[in-house]
Image (cartoon, rainbow, N blue to C red):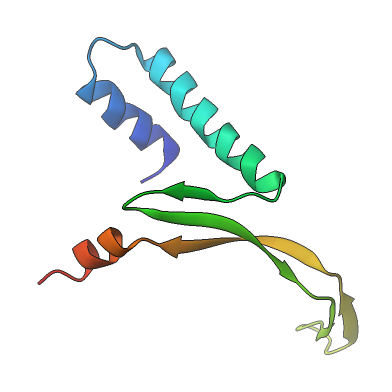
Length: 93
């Protein structure tokens, strides 16, 4: 599902809200999550999972095209850990 599909589904489920209102709500939620992750925090959605930021150390790497050695800088990457309920629903037979 992409963002526009989420907005369309929420608009359909909530006919009293306009599409523009739903789009603003979704954007505010996503921006709040991004802001929390930028600040080094964690975003947890019970039953779904948790987003956090992990640090990756600097390391030597290789250019796949030429094989030349390159330096890969240290960086922060987003990490998602699924919740127990989500895993249970995905693995239900």
